[in-house]
Length: 302
Image (cartoon, rainbow, N blue to C red; front, side):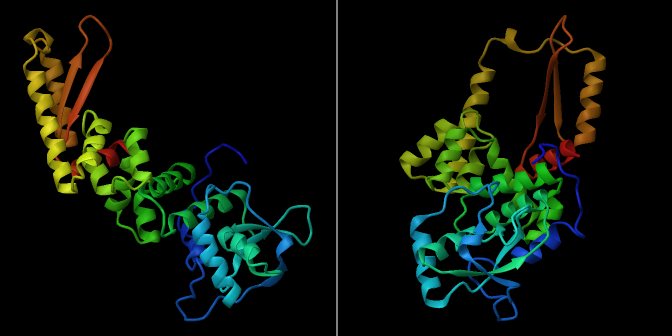
């Protein structure tokens, strides 16, 4: 597959169309109350997994439960497949690899399938969508899925919100978790921290240290928010106590005017620290709430 970013297809023959094929997953019947009718019954040895499937781990216990259900009831919802190029009569899984694995464990000989004509880009997109819809997804995995849909396929948070049934703020807050250090993301994956805990740590100077303290003390989300605010206050106080030589020298009128213009445009306080005698410097933007941070990310992203 090409590493180039695929072109955005919009919501016509794009995300909404793909969603129609993966809306009913994990052996659930359709909204009409009946299983989806398969296009074909295919020998299980003629069905192969997608080598580009982003999901690499399938829980053994969950597979055993699904295999037991399949032994009793069969595969209720057909797998979505496409024909393999140059290999007549064989198929590649687009959605439903978990059912394929469980059906093998249940020693089924045939699988019901829906045959679709998807290209490589659409196959990867569907695999990501299917993963996002998993009930056992942790916040980091879900955030990675949303980020992939935005970066690989050009979907905006508004489009994802409309099609996937999630609020834009929910998606934005989840994706923001990926800014946390890997150590904190590991705590999230392992269930030692909730998404609420992690959100409270995003703006902390040392999120990993605070995360360890939260886990050690068993703090609630509210307690974590208070701890993060206290840590931020202590950091400001320590910075204020440093020698005044560290503070920026008096700024010229042009710099102050530029700060004012940027602050007015962004609706947030902007500070410019220009390195004396250099062409480099630092721009700082202060936000007072996560909503303001969300707005800033939207403005910078556009």
